[in-house]
Length: 441
Image (cartoon, rainbow, N blue to C red; front, top):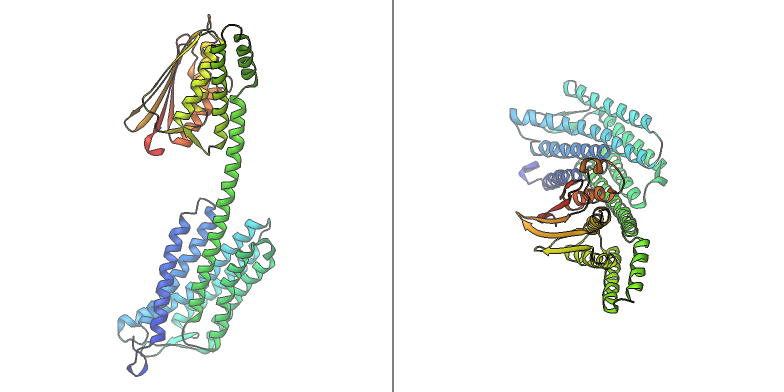
């Protein structure tokens, strides 16, 4: 790029590079922000629009600078279109900025700032009309025969409307500043003050476009503010999720470890001492293993190792076999144990087989089979019993004795991306198969 006298115009080159990088940053910022749209689609869309307009402004100014001072038909049109785009995008930036910042205010405070928004839109619209008129009847700026931009007396109107637009946004934010977080307040106010100061300076000192560079900085600060807000929101949601998961684990634990089951098991062991101390000691050991395994689940975040769950279930079945004089039989065939599943899921299904399947028979005896294997990158767990069975459609539509099945099915789907198949017929028993994709674990 050549300046007066054939010397390189370093300041213009530096500005082009800075604005080029600013446009690149804006594009990257849009891609990043797009990934956060699920948090607040409306506000995110407004911020993306704000940044895209800034990127167009920066790219337009790069073209305006690059072709300034060049001759020829191509330069003639590019310089004029690029400069008009710079001014139009400047006003569009004000309108999109107030759209985003007002949504931020309304999100923090239960108040409408629609009138502020409409006033800014009016100023922006007036500015765009001014630029369109200037294209046909120059009174704000024009170009010499070498396609060099120069100001006309009416150019002060551009600076005035820009400053007024930014000032109104700043007043709006300061009016509700107590509702903004400290870092958020600093970032947003800085994002507005920099362009306003540069506008005032450049109104009296023409040269390198400080306004556009300041605007680029303001977009970066706004992006930073958004990401800080998004990060804080993610952290808060994670804390809430952890709290809900803890409450859920406690509720599940309360549901699984029934007080009457412990009482009945201890009573059975107590009277069993009269018949066989070794057998009663074994039952007591299994009861302790069952309780320990159930309590250990409280330390798990989401899922538990299948082997741990299986060990707890095995202890439970041993206790039930002891209580009912071996009327409850079981068999475990664990070919595959290298995976995880939601806590208490296997235990819920096995207890359901014993309590609502086998123990409801006449006579109350039966067999439970647990089989796990890996097939086509899917971990499969089958729980089968020869209990009384039930009507699957009716059971899954109601909340009753089979509510554990409904909840387990939902948890398998949500937490593991898997599925649960149920086969059961009244009088013939039940077969439940868990299907957990290996790649999901």
